[in-house]
Image 1 (tube, helix red, strand yellow):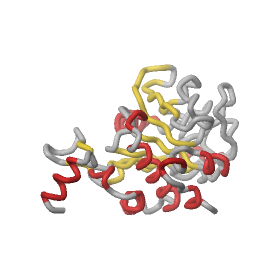
Image 2 (cartoon, one colour):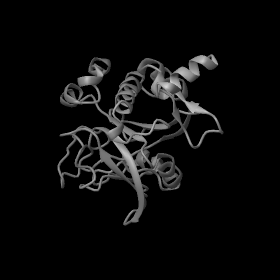
Image 3 (spheres, helix red, strand yellow):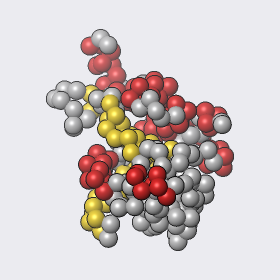
Image 4 (tube, helix red, strand yellow):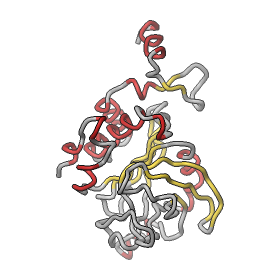
Length: 241
């Protein structure tokens, strides 16, 4: 890209500077299309479902047009709850360096299903997982050790995440070897729990505004999500299965 083009994009506010990149480096996430971003994600995580990555890219581009949501353009995490818990179904991408940081197993809520996640809720006490886009906010030490608070960005679907204490944390029941024997991972109270051995570096990679996009082909969410439709256009048709 020419120096003139870079200056032009910077003047328009379409290049996001990343603190973790080398001095002078810029992250052109807001300057590229959702299709190009999805292609970048697919190259980094070829085992992930391309249609899910397209939806995540669309939601990310939409969120970056709404600065009040506090979403960072540096990294992105995608959870594909349409996959069984015995398979890796969480990816964390470094968008600045166009590389995959984590490909991990993740638990779902005890009332969301057995090996497969089939039920979702925004209600406190449901012990179910929630769908949609979240922002990863601050860390804290709690009953599950080092944990990361999530704020839901999808009214009616996950916007009660903070009051429900839906957080990312490590858990001993997220054990792929045990899951193969019992037919599923252990389950949480609704949190996307991860392996203890990766919890701290994964949480540190997400905290401070990373979007966490939790997918399932739920038609109500796909139709009414404000980040997949509305003023940012519609992307629901991408996930038709």
